[in-house]
Image (tube, rainbow, N blue to C red):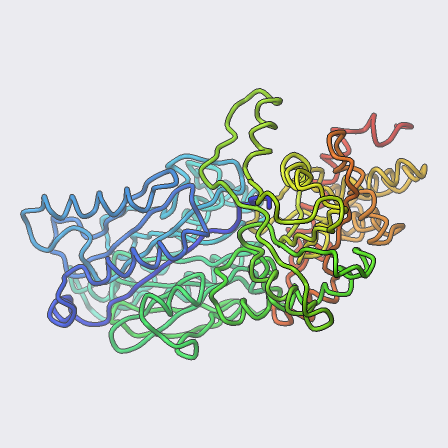
Length: 597
């Protein structure tokens, strides 16, 4: 319903045989480049604000480029990039072609920090005259302690050019890569090597596990960090809690890495069993000689793989995700039956396009088990090309109401209940300004909006674009109930504890903010959310039905990252940012939410 911007997409390819092998076998010298394009297109769902690619040619002669990068901004970034690359190849008069090499990296970006523009599009590149010290990075990450790492770099004497987690990661890891090169330099000297022999020794003995273990221990957050070096090292590392996803495939020709399993299945025509998941805290490493290894860089913590990946973000053609989304819909049957007063004869089921479709199938299957004649219709159609960019509020709200269109005559006016399922309800703005209004045109007896996800009560700080707690309709409902019942003291207590936690007087604890919700049941919050969604133009009764936390864990047992629903953050940085977000909200609304302040 509401477009929630989220974590990015990554794609990597390492060719393990000489380039001529792929030209002979596959009839093209751009075998890997074509595969990279396909992997990125198949992950377009993960980022449409910008994209970039990089390539390393390990056998280029001195004096010629061997590390290539191309980036573009905007929704058509992928097309721009590959058009530019093929144009450069067509214009090249020398050999080998630009962007023809053994190592490839691709990235698709969604901004979750309001930092936009080409400078923030991955990959990030650090140049040096020594091949081993060239570093190219991209990733699917949001680091929660960037300020602390930034300050530590300054204390070391460094001067970072840009404040952003990607650039700071590049600076820190680049520094550690320099130290790794120097370590090998000293070994080479002790062996009596000189000149180019030292360089060749360094290039063939870089141990990226050393670099990663001394870099990533400094960061708190959810991440998959990927990199290439000029000397031919490739790596991808996942955070210790497994918050962000990553999968890989390897045979005797290639190693390929992507954010989603179906991307690898489709691109390389693989079975599900051919693909492995990178484990929490683990790195997949391919050295300059093409040797693949898996190394545990940081100790694995409590596994907290993002459940929103399964509910909403990832492509639904992963067989496990497909099964889980159907189960999420199935588990809502009893709540739906209760919401329509048991009158399934006069109920029509539908969904809000497009990501709730699989949960919709599960919902209707479950209801048909008790009422085989339940009616189903596609009552809503989404106009993907309509843009609500007009700045005047009244005009923008009017356009928002037309992002969706209805199937007129699909229900019996005044008689049928209309049940529509969505994957989540975040801010409630699209629901209020568009969905409810347009569904009301069908004049149903009652509108029941079903969320296959639980109530989103807390912001995310690991790569999803919902960082302000005050934007969440569940939080707005909580604050409204506290005010109505004269319980502002709970807000005041949480505020004082939050300040004490950030001042170092007490231990930061997510219970500080979770206490706000403690007085209320989920049903009470549901009712208040409905009131907040009411508009003068709609007189039809509306009810909200949410997935329970227990239902979520039953349907998605292996992805326990549920902090946006429960408030239990997997890392200290997330807890600290939660408290900061709450304090910022109260500071902005003191006169309204704390009338005795």
